[in-house]
Image 1: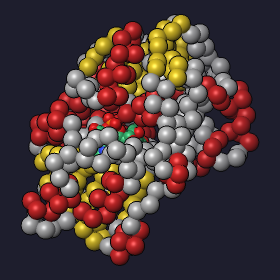
Image 2 (image 1 turned 180 degrees about the vertical axis):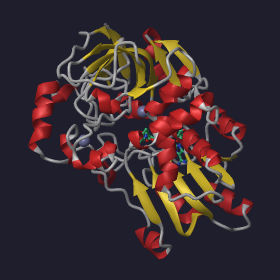
Image 3 (image 1 turned 45 degrees about the vertical axis):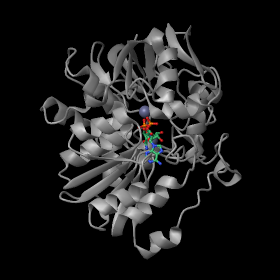
Image 4 (image 1 turned 60 degrees about the horizontal axis):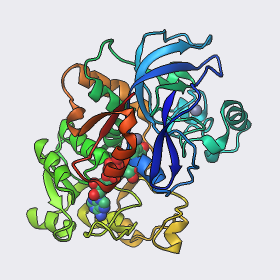
Length: 390
Ligand SMILES: NC(=O)c1ccc[n+]([C@@H]2O[C@H](COP(=O)([O-])OP(=O)(O)OC[C@H]3O[C@@H](n4cnc5c(N)ncnc54)[C@H](O)[C@@H]3O)[C@@H](O)[C@H]2O)c1
Ligand SMILES: [Zn+2]
Ligand SMILES: [Zn+2]
């Protein structure tokens, strides 16, 4: 089958790779209809993670069940499904309490449990695995193997309706929602979202749906800022001047209730080029009111081969912890527990109450992936959210 393979930093290509097969009775094979490119893919694409050449990219996958393992009970051939970007076993402690992003079974890095090791060995070699999402090949391909399929595949209405909206249930819509949730947000409150990439736009949209009184969104990319206006948010261009001052000036000096970091460790200063990994955290601590909350879905990593300084290369990010403490701010971090939200967000889409696909900028064929990665990485030509179709 054809798949998007990571060759080396700043290079992917569509290559022939073996079609996945059922390796465990709980597996299904899904024929991909849509797989999205994500900002998280760019960290790997740029060589800024431990991802090794040869892996198949793609963690935002949806399609039609094509083959079913003998142990699968809830799915059948022909079902239309979307999968959370982070594979989870459904049986470990974290999965049991709904924290599926921290499944210790498929992420041996999180723990040393023997079962994790056994699973890794029986699945595929770790060198081919996806970074911090379990030892699995990606779905920017014609087919993908879904482990623990009853647990991981969310069923969708049959047909082709809302394909773009449902595809976003794999990651960015739940992740944006999660960012708002992590901040401790309550209806009626004001909130600022740093980053108007797909995740930031989804966080802003979630805050709107959840009844925010004011939503500020900070970025510097004109097309992205324009999208924030479309959904009733207030765009703040940080290439113009200090975004915190801009927000405080508009609010007569009053801070906002909540803040979301949808940028992560590759944050830049206003020039859009100079990386400064602590710049968003610092701004959030300044702009959120005492006893408010910060939600941090933006990615930070324990080791960064391309970091601008030796401390952040080891994941040490300096920020004013004293000020954070003085203000009594709460902080929530981490990957999104997609399964905690995806079925409810699916139902909002079905009911016509959410239409997250307003972020989608491009629908293209899998064969055009290399060019799309280049443009999305440069954030040019309006490349905001790219959906690949095999
Ligand atoms: N927690 C999770 O489960 C999860 C899931 C998906 C993605 N992510 C992470 O979320 C982050 C955002 O993802 P995305 O797909 O939207 O990425 P993206 O790269 O498309 O968007 C990031 C945006 O941040 C802007 N930006 C850079 N520096 C900034 C600053 N100082 N202030 C304000 N904006 C700034 C950029 O202009 C860009 O538009 C990434 O770090 C990604 O890895 C986390
Ligand atoms: Zn993603
Ligand atoms: Zn688990």
